[in-house]
Amino acid sequence: MASNALLSLFSMILVSVVTKLIFPTSPLAFGLTIFLVPLLTYIISSMASSSKLPPGPLSIPIFGNWLQVGNDLNHRLLASLCNRFGSIFLLKLGSKNLVVVSDAELASQVLHAQGVEFGSRPRNVVFDIFTGNGQDMVFTVYGDHWRKMRRIMTLPFFTNKVVHNYSEVSI
Image 1 (cartoon, rainbow, N blue to C red):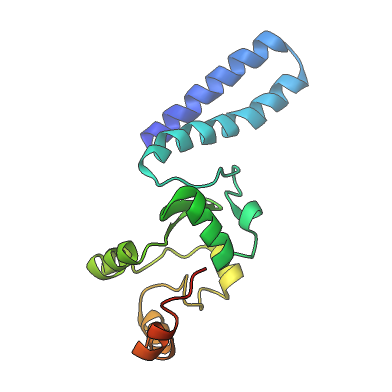
Image 2: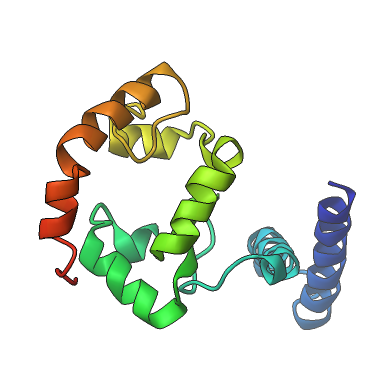
């Protein structure tokens, strides 16, 4: 938290000095300062925190990867991103990070070995708009609704016969 304040202060001082040198007393200097301070703060803070995160497509400030994926976060898009960035990659949806795991063994490790830690997701207004208040299977919060949805999805799709029939199908 303190590092974000320091980054903001550093950005503000840097932009202020540069704009005063270039545009000593103009409204343009004020406008540039107002625009560049948040942008520099975002860029510096994302560079500092991104070293711990998996790779992913370049994101746009504020929007993240929404403009690239839109409403169409389907299996073909995820497969193409998997080919580019590997079996674990990061999508930024707004200000939230979405880590996609596309390897069966890694997904099993994440969901079974560490299920409680990764089983829930924070509520988000943007997700609520696109998922009907989190009532879908992917973005639902861990709890009674999640357990009901899991039971509904597991029975028809993951029986031995269905898994065997589709085991040879590739994306």
